Image (tube, rainbow, N blue to C red; front, side, top):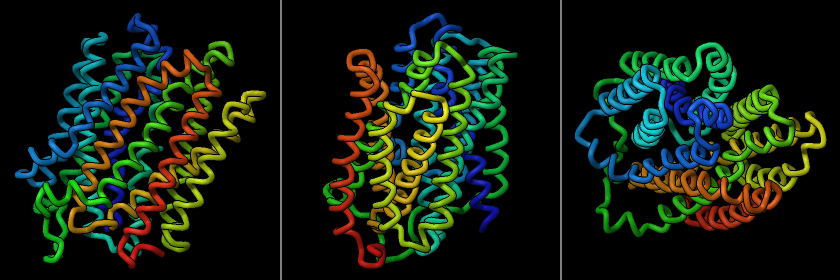
Length: 387
């Protein structure tokens, strides 16, 4: 089982690299493609927008076995990456980002449901935490390997690196995901409900609202961190790479804490602490640039809490409504991508109009609203997962 989990983690890293590689290099990509930074930020948001249709994509792909669907997603990402490497232009970059939104919206709900159907809830934090390590590993690979490739081989080399990651991911899925694996629960009492029923389920609605608001808040800040630091430290690429690595390491620590701590203390308590820590981090972030170490400390602490809240919250949501698990996870993924899309577009505008201080305050407000909704969701959860 551990090998199955680790294989999914590594394969999912390829998907996440494609989703995250733009963030550290928005100034550099905009320069090489000869467009504005705002244009690149908007394209990143466009990619998230194509993830909004996750429930529809899931319905279309339902007849295919899970392994086939995951392999199809990886193959599409590989073709788009190598295509952009051969012809690195704005339109191929845009197509690549759109593909990233499409394939991740199919990949993630299936992986999460497979894990939920195989792993008991008492061990769910461990499994989800390990698999979500792919999120931070993707940013580490993007910032460290990506920076080296971008410097020596340009955008073509960077895109070829993305394609190679998908080759590795495809091999692991083929070897480790059983041909008959299915994400639906096997419990006969947990049969899929009709669309008219599950679309009105308050647990699904609250889960989607929480995820959407949290993603919106995070994207508003994340889409601006490289331009903000680029302006603050005079275009020094090194500071962006260093802070990106700090973010990735902090996310990894947050995921490890979920994996090895949330099941012990209780997922609900763990999520509560992480939400409160996230709010404090966003409040402190705009005042951290008095020195490099200030940025590192505040960003590091903040992203430990951010990732802890996301991952532990996901572990909770996999069990909040088992009869409609796949529908709920697809809906929350759609809400997440809606938040990322809106955050990427409005975040760039907020940064231009209001500056980084007020942008961070908007993020705080959104997270507070999401936390209030989370408290309501806790009350609707089955008794077995309220601890």
